[in-house]
Amino acid sequence: MKSSKDALKLGAELLANRDFSEQEMAARLVKRGYSEEESRAAAARLVELGLIKIRGSSRDDLAKAAREYLEKKGKNLKPSLLSSLAAYLVRKGFSEELVEEYINDAYEILNRESIADD
Image 1 (cartoon, rainbow, N blue to C red):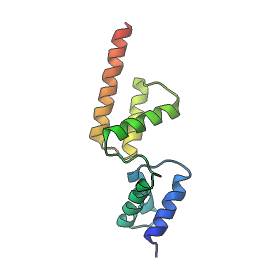
Image 2: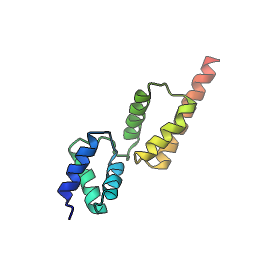
Image 3: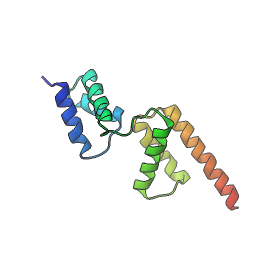
Image 4: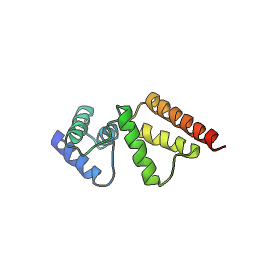
């Protein structure tokens, strides 16, 4: 039988390959056969240990995740990139409402910059 300790170990191993949000990690552990409770507990512990940095619960966390995504892409914020950014943020576990609000704000900023350039 799989234990919570095993879920925590697997979670740490998965993080060696790529970043996961708390929600993504819990879902990944469930797919690997751990119970929902064990998976959520292991993901929460990985957050406590500082191994998972994206929790998907606040606008500050969302802004940080968006900046990291854009830095990895090596691109400036452009309208064409906003839809892929939105999908990424939802996958990371941010609520659709919070993502929509953030993306709308980004569109507003881009529109203001576009008007200022004219």
